Length: 516
Image (cartoon, rainbow, N blue to C red; front, side, top):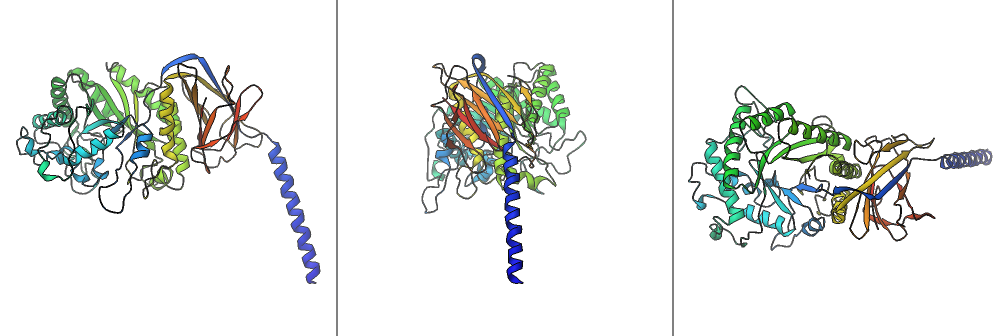
C-alpha cells in the first residue's frame, strides 16, 4: 500500500514539474516589455539644471566620544547644489537652537541691534558643515512646522518691522560677518567667519497657507497662526526691507504648501503692491512623476499670468506621498521603508521629467537623517540607500553640461504586465508610459543618459529589455550603473549589439546611468 501510494505521489510530482517547466518555457518564449532609448547628440536643448538640491545638510560625526556616525563624505560626493534650512531643528545636536528666527533671536523684546542678543552658535556650525560639503545654503527665514498643541513660532511676530530688521541682521551675520564671535565664551568649538557663506537665496516663511483663515486665527495653526492678510503684510514688510538693503540677493517665498487659490492671491498682492519676489517657492507631493511635471507647467503659467515672468519657480519640497492620513504609513514605506526601491525610482523619474519642464530648481524633502521622509540615508548607520543614487547620478549628468534630445519608444509583449503600450515620448513634453530618460553631452563628445523605469502599480513585475542607441557612438566601452531590487548603483555590463548599441534589462522601479 505504502509503495503504491509513493509511486503515485512520484508520478504526480514529475507531472507537476514537467507542466511547470513547459509553462515556464512558453512564458519565456513570449516577448516582455521593451523600450528603445534614442539619444541625438546633434540636437542641443540647453543646460542641465540643478534638479538634485535638497532640504537640509549633512550629519557630521560628533567630536569626542566613541559612538561616531555621519554621512558627510557621502553627502559631499553627491555634490548637492543647495540645502534648504527648513525643519533643521531636527538635524543636529542642539537643533532646537538652529536656524529658526525665534531660536537665533530668542527674546523678541530685546534690542535687535545688539549682536549679544542673538544665538548663532548651532546655526553657524550647521551652515559651516553644509558649506564644507560643497553645498550652497538656501536659508529659510521663519519657523519649523509645529504639529503639537502648543505653538512657539507659528504665531505672527508682534512687530513685522522688527522681525524684518532681525532677518536683516541674520543676513549680515552670514554674508558680512556682523556679530561674529560674540558667543565665543559660550562654545568650545569655534569656527572662523568667511565671506564664502555668501548666501544668495533668502526665503520668507514656510507654508503659511497650510491652515488658511480670513477671519481670525486658525484653530490649530501649524505654520502660520494669523490671517491671510496678516501674512501678506509680513511678507511685504520683510521683502521690501531686505531687497532694499541687499538688492544683489534673491528674496522670495512663501514656500506654498499647495493651496494655489491662496497662492494666486499672494501673487496678485505682490504684483499690485510692488512687492519684491525674486523667486516663487512652492511644494507638491504625488505618486507619479508626471503629476509633478504637470504641476510645474501650471505654476509657471500662474506666475506669468500675474507678471512674474522673470521670477524663478522653485519647487523646494517634493516626495512620494499617496496620502497624509490613512495612506501615510504606506507613503513612509515607499519613502524609507520596505518599498524604498519604488521611492528611489520615483525620485529618479521626477528629476528626469522636471529637467524638461519650466522649473528652475528642485529641492527634495528631506535629507534629514532622522526623518521618515529621507530615503537617501539609513536612519541607524547613515549609509546611502537606493534613493541617494539619483542625486549622485544627476551630479554626474550635470558635469556633462549640455542636454541633448532623447526619446523613448516603449512596447509590451503578449505576456507583459507592464503598465504601458507602444508609445512615443517627445523630446520635451509630458512623459508617457513607465520609462523616461534624459541625456547630456560634454564638449569633447562624451556623454551620459539617465534611464528610469517607474511604476506606481505594484502588480507590474516583468523585466524589460531596453536598447540604448546613440548614433555615431559605440557603447562598447560605456559604463552602466544599475539600481533595482538586488543592485544598488552596481556596475553591470551592457549587451553590445553589432551596431554598437547597448542592451540592459530593467526591473520595474529601477534606473540606469550609462556614460561613455
